[in-house]
Image 1 (tube, rainbow, N blue to C red):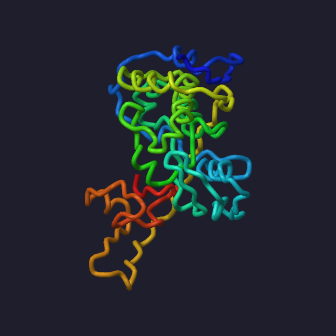
Image 2: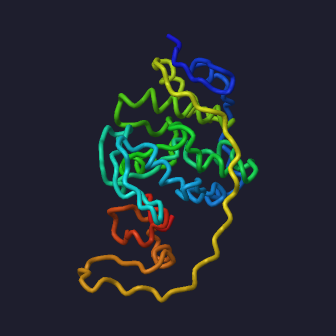
Image 3: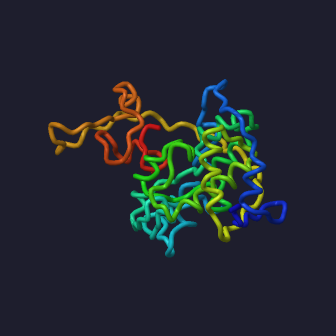
Length: 267
């Protein structure tokens, strides 16, 4: 039976199935080398000075989060990870998932976008459909997969996840490849229920890069480090060792190498 899920967009309202039907099916593009930096994530800041990661943590916390007023760092809150049906109050255990990953968007048409549209996509906090606060484990498992190769292990999350996926792809004019389209279609046909409205995309000013800080001498490894511990003073050392990116919990990860505090060092 066709879905009756309602997705309200700029056109006033339509079903999930009809929104899905507007998406163009085309092979993924690989002509231009992927450049994550062009999406500007998470460097776009709001009027309060919070970057995109902090904005999503504040938005998605189930309770009023505690925020460091000096750096807009979120130090505590309560988050629900839809993908794996888990709760945490530790922001260090939360990563921000681009539901349609930046590299997936790049291959699906974003590589041809102007700079402001790329930045708008990479930092879209207008609704939960583009960016979500999820557990580090589920985000790492998903990586840049599409629905043909990854779906949330929490089966109760499938319809919301696919609704977000379809809405983001349609809202931003991104394509689907054949395998992705077929996998998505199977779930679209099963889903029903109301979902939040998402406004059309709006341009975001490309962030101005900050001047690089003066070079500092590399810090010495902690004196108490065990003989088997792995320590990298800089990301250049980790890259030379061939271990990047380093996820939280892996040897060599430390917060000093994780500039945007998303649980992934030396991206």
